[in-house]
Length: 138
Image 1 (cartoon, rainbow, N blue to C red):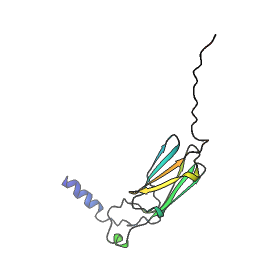
Image 2: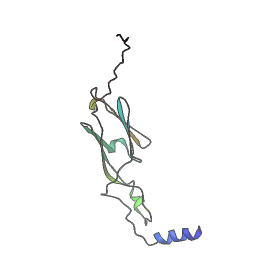
Image 3: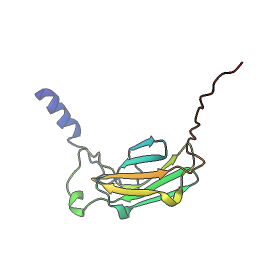
Image 4: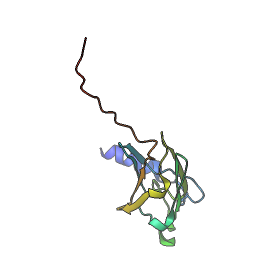
């Protein structure tokens, strides 16, 4: 285990990685859930505030976009040996299988997770058809 740790440390020893992902694109992870009367979309946006996020809907396409900025100049000091956090602008287009009622869409942000609820239009909702009991006559 020590040999592996030494090898790992030496591998990154002289790297001069760029500390910023500025200008690069990244994609938040999404969950899309279809329910009987609505779609619910959850996006992981850690460290972002609601004012940094834009939502638009056109027809059956929801667009989530925004920009995640690096925190502070202090974080840029020193040499980076490994960078996984992503910064910069992003855009995700989610095509839904049926139309949504754009006037009733709700969105909220909690603990770095954006939740968007998109009610289906009346025409897109499934129609239940009652089956009548009829006496068979011959």
